[in-house]
Length: 349
Ligand SMILES: Nc1ncnc2c1ncn2[C@@H]1O[C@H](COP(=O)(O)OP(=O)(O)OP(=O)(O)O)[C@@H](O)[C@H]1O
Ligand SMILES: [Mg+2]
Image (cartoon, rainbow, N blue to C red):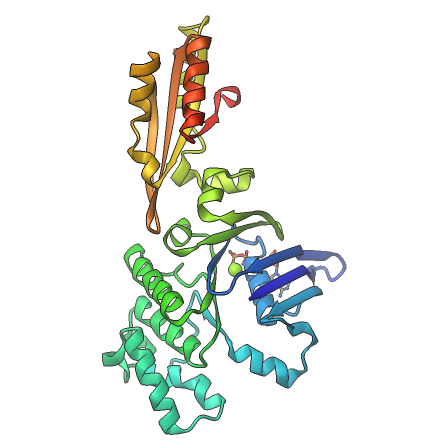
C-alpha cells in the first residue's frame, strides 16, 4: 500500500550553513489495511517522515510509492487527486473556528466541488459514525477535545481516503478520551478498511491499536516489527527505555542491591536474575511452581507487570534464583521446551 524507499529529508540549520538530516535513508513498507505505528522521542523525525507520505514534505531524496505510484513523479494535478485519498488528523485538530461541526466536515467536499445534496449525503453518515449528529450545528469552541478530534476524523474521511495519517492525534486528550478515540479509529480501520499510520510517543496507542511498529531515533528507523515481537525482544536501548513502563527494563538501584545481597549469600551457587515474558495463554502455565516442585528451584519475584495488548496480554516478571548448576540446567531446558521467553539479566547487574 505504502512504500517509502530510501527517504532522506535534509534541512538547512538555523545558521544557514550546516545541514540537518531529519530523516536518513528510511525504507518502510506499510501493508494494505493495517494499523502501523511510528514511535519515537521528540525530534526523532516522525512527523517529517509521515508528511512525506502525502508529500506535505517533499523528501530531498527517495521514492514515495502509494498504491503502486511514485508520488514524487506526479504532476501537480495528479498529486492533488492522490492526496484526496490520504486523510490526515492532527494533535491540535486544526478545525476552522468560524465553521460549525457540519461545515468543517463538509469543507473538503466543497473544495472538491460537490453539490449541497452530495455533501449532505456524505456528511450526515460521517457525523453518525463519529457520534456527533447532535452536535452538528455547534462551533469548535463549544466542543470538548475528544469531540473536536472526532470532527477532525470525520473531516479526514470525507473524501473516502484509503489511507489515514494520524500525527499525535490523541496526545492532547486525557486517557479515557484517548481510549475511546482509539476505539473509533480501530472501528474505521475494520469497517472501512482504511490503512492507518499512527505517529505517537504514547505506548497506550501502540498497545491498543497498532499491529506493527517502527521505532525512530535521530532520523533513522532503529527497530521494526509486530508489536508483540518488539515488546518481547527490544534490541535497541532507546526502545527499551520507551518500553520501561511495560517491561520493567530498568531495575531501580535498590532492587539491584537486593539482588547482589542475595547472590553474595550464595557464592557457590548458580545465581541468576531473569526477566520472563509471557504472551496470551502462556501466562496460564504454572511455570514458577513447576520449577519448584519438579526441579527444587525457587524463584524470588522482584517485580511483575501485566499489560493488555489489543486482544491479548503481555506479562513480564523479574525473578532471581540461587541453585546448583545442574538444577539450573534442568530449569533452563524446561523453560526452553515450554517456549517461555527468558532474558538473563545477571551479567548486566
Ligand atoms: N521545516 C523545518 N525546517 C528545519 N528543521 C526542521 C523542519 N521541520 C523539522 N525540523 C527538524 O527536524 C527534526 C525532526 O523533526 P520532527 O518534527 O519530524 O520530529 P518529531 O519526531 O515529529 O518530534 P515531535 O515528537 O516533537 O513532534 C527536528 O530536529 C526538527 O527541529
Ligand atoms: Mg511530530
